[in-house]
Image (cartoon, rainbow, N blue to C red; front, side):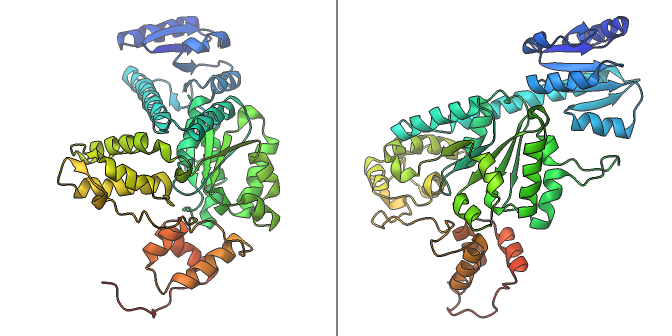
Length: 428
């Protein structure tokens, strides 16, 4: 049963609110000041009246307990300040009972959904190999620590999933987990996304993701794509703010950030922050003994999503898969299995339904920076110019490991428009 704590210096008013919530089916208790030692038994806090809000905000944020503010007089500046300090909702007296009950139920429902997502993240990390056991142990160790995290691995290894698992296993797990894909958001917009629009006193001000994730975790997916100005502002945030006033930064990358830092394309200071806790994800070709468990898990997920009966993976198909190097890792395995499920007419999937060339030699992912490329942009320009005559824009984007929108935006920024003529004939 959910437990609500009402913090109100007026005992009579607080008792009245407890009674009101009780009639609405909620279990509540009242305290004139916030008892920090009781927060482990509380699911949500409502602060009302002139209680010491600053202390309440800080304590609730550290305990990852959602907080609703009920103010005597509404003001835009106060509302913005409360939300930036971590309040889940801001309401103004006089308040209708059903409005408060609805706000409380909404926050409790969001918490349940977040708990379900957390358990799903760890459950999706399937495998019984030595490297998988080592990875899970590393995730638990990093989750128990503080400081920024860098999750590194090839495309398709599940970096974002590992980042979520780190958050879920940490003391911040009840707080927000906020994600931004640095490869998708245009460079000219990413600062506003991270830090807001700088109009804190305005009613239409937009809160940045750094503030939204306060007390929780901020995932910077593909951090190598983050513009240098934004990198510098992040360094300021993580060096100047106290631990309780900032999110935990978790970054992912498939690129060699040390080399980019040496070339001046990535902040060495930010890299040093992220290197406090390093998590390396093994490629699938190094844990092929996990294929049976992983394939079974993915088949169940695919068939549930497609509302299809789950076929059996034939023994010769599994042997065929084990002889392949999986350059696209788990993501490629899921795509291969989904295609096979769609095409299957029998109860079993044989090797003929697997769109892979098991005899092909292993090759590094196209998105990894080549040895001779001096910067990430150099590599991007070279790759696009070398392959745009043979590949469509969709194929180019897939090879680079980015979206088609991101490919177009980088073409504009680097002044490499699509050529109108192509060397090969039309695709058939």
